[in-house]
Image 1: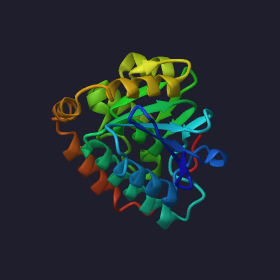
Image 2 (image 1 turned 120 degrees about the horizontal axis):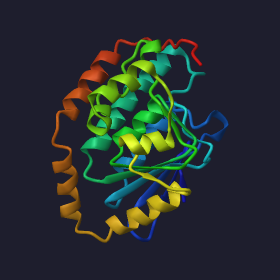
Image 3 (image 1 turned 120 degrees about the vertical axis):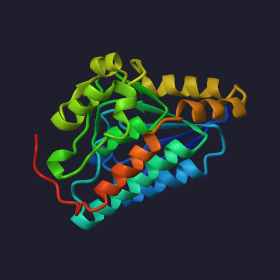
Image 4 (image 1 turned 180 degrees about the vertical axis):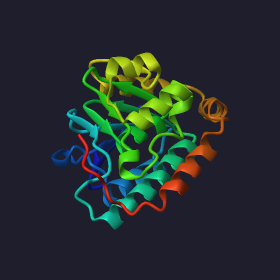
Length: 230
């Protein structure tokens, strides 16, 4: 296992890579170094599958680091949108294994992934309008439908694991999502790589990329200020 600072990288004999968010003291909050490490780890992955997981099961990611200065937080937000676009553009299959909290940008990491495996204690929340942002509107309709997407974005309410499974926000609900993700990644590595890449490309032939670009552009004017909210 190698260390990219806030992200631990492990390349497995089966042919896939695991990227583990490793900032347990701040619930895997995302800062400049973390986003850069994720982008580097994804771009350099040697195999056809990448597993995205936390090292601490208590939190997948609490979103952009609230301790950052406003201007850095705004820069991190835009860099995250670049990461989401790269996650969608890569032919690699990205399997997210999530437990604990996935909030804001952490929730967007989930919807930018190709498959989402959650634990029973998972809570997903799209925090956006209270901070002057649109968060998740680009990807939620394709997963949960237009009405639910509107509700999740505007209400910013937490979605527990069982509801997330029922509405399509996650794909599998298991006790140990990391172990399940490793099994799944190993299975995908046995398939024809060209066929796997074609499946991802064809499944993603929607207007999502344009929607993602529009949300990134709209949020680019954000100054980084956040409002207190329970």
